[in-house]
Length: 227
Image (cartoon, rainbow, N blue to C red):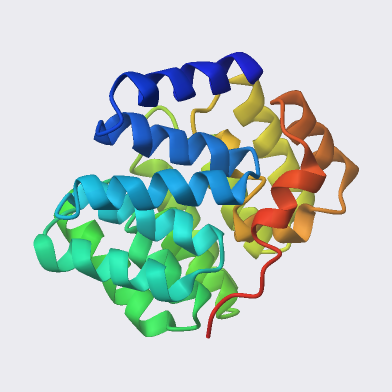
């Protein structure tokens, strides 16, 4: 991790106005639990390229992780305004709506994304689980896995299992994600969806195995979310 930190810092030093360098630096520091460093790079990225769909979509997710809902919704809705048909992976604004209790808005956005991409969102399954619509959540999870073809990241599936309170299943999928070197596993420490696992020794072990300090990363989302 220290070597990676040096490389990210070096990349920004070489080109302070590089969108990718600042973008990935923000993600790196956020995953490590370094909130202020992450916000510095995130806000710099937004200044460099304020009309970027990718930047605004990415900012929506990180601000949500930090509990900065006002900033998150501004970034997410800006991306939607820039291109209403923009779909990359799962719609991150929908996840924000879900965390804010705006379930109908979340479902509508997930289904819109599905109509454009043909892929069922894991986030839609989480939303149904949060609404205590367990059968729909399970059916949606199965459909999401099916529309991913031959590979579905274990950490994506684990998100849904946590929402369904199936913690053993979630840990099993996270362990698979670790073994398969899932590229998105590094965010599970700061993702609020995984908060119910933070007292589970198996979850703490996974975080340490990928080089994260649980006490540090958990502080990122300990801040009370904005209303």
